[in-house]
Image (cartoon, rainbow, N blue to C red; front, top):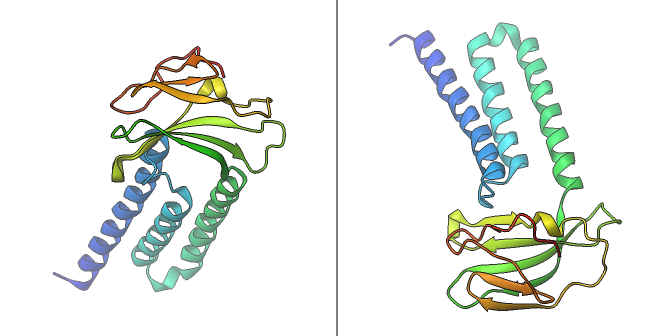
Length: 180
């Protein structure tokens, strides 16, 4: 195997790994998997892998193009980083679900949003497959007081007397019309 063939193979492997890193970030965000919902580090890894693959293919003669590619990828990474920083969440209160369910309710807030004090997130703890679901009917609540929560059964929390139906397997809210 020639040196040029090894270089191209290495570049292809790096490119595939970069695409896999971006795919993992997309799957994490789209599937609500908390282990993969890390766009900043995954996009940073992808940027480095893709830039290195470009440098291997283009060779040392075209470093300017490799640098330009790196700058573009760094700009994308910076944009994603700023977006992640602006949308970072804080937690006001955590209410554990019934024993053995792995469910918790979290009353969270966006650090940058002063108009919506809190929203509700349902978390189903399953190790690497942990998922979180925003309860859309509780998003952007302008009520400062967090409701009283009790559990009527393992898949039904009650918020100030209003029952929220959850899928017991995933924790996903199954009532689209629920409003806190």
